[in-house]
Image (cartoon, rainbow, N blue to C red; front, side, top):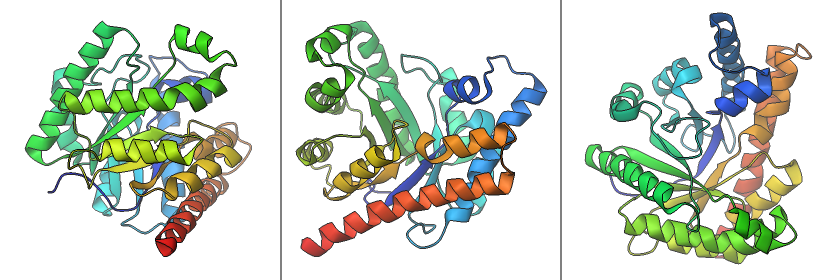
Amino acid sequence: MSFGYNLPLYLLPFDHRHSYVSGMFQLHAPLTATQRRAVIRSKQVIYDGFRNALGGELTVDTAGLLVDEEFGGAILCDANRRGYVTALSTERSGSAEFEFEYGSEFAAHIEAFHPTFAKALVCYNPAGDAAVNARQTARLKQLSDYCRKVGQRFMFELLVPATKAQMIHSETGQKAYDEVIRPALMLQTISALQDAGIEPDVWKIEGLGRREDYEHIAAMCRRGGRDEVGCIVLGRHADDAIVAGWLRTAASVPGFIGFAIGRTTFWNAIADYVNNRTTRLEAALRVAQRYRNWAKIFDAARRSRSSVA
């Protein structure tokens, strides 16, 4: 298997665990067996939506799902049998520092599900706690080395939360940080992680406001002969108009191959299902419609870029 992944990748992520259980169900660990079954059922509804959406831009080759082992193990097994692109989360949910969900047994859990991608979500700010960043880098190098050794594709979800000093410096708050400060920090982070020997096939990137920021990120991810490395834009539970803008801009930039839009796709539909305001079928169809819409937006912008080129 060659290094990198440069095919269209339209991902439906629903590997949320800590935030999903607390936000959707108002529950906290440890869950009872009944509560656990309810969470698993709700994720099955999202999977129903994924399958209902297939067709058109969402082919078996371009569509993919990202889910966790804890509540989505059966989904991963079924998706593998059907030949879908799959991604499995490896990080401990709810932890500010990257740690393996299953500690030193992380490799065995990846191998049990044979996902297309092993995914790591990481909060990393180069101006943050140096000791935390060093520990995270060491664990991520372990994961990256494992993936390269066994031919397992590796997806890196990068979040760059502001430090207190950066937020104060941004003056006008989160929006100014996201638009002015965060893009440069993302470049620094990617460069530092690459220099540490961490080599994802796909980088999962927070939405950016300006086209040139996407261009700089793609160039950084592909520097030094990493020509086949892909980038996908994530949704951050933003509203529809913001997500659509991110998709159109990202799709116009070579190197951005798709998206991973989760909560903006499924949250409202699943909340209605969980609270008995809609049926399972209707909830799944709503998830499918929104997922399909993101694919249409990205695909149209990507094709427009190709026709201009």
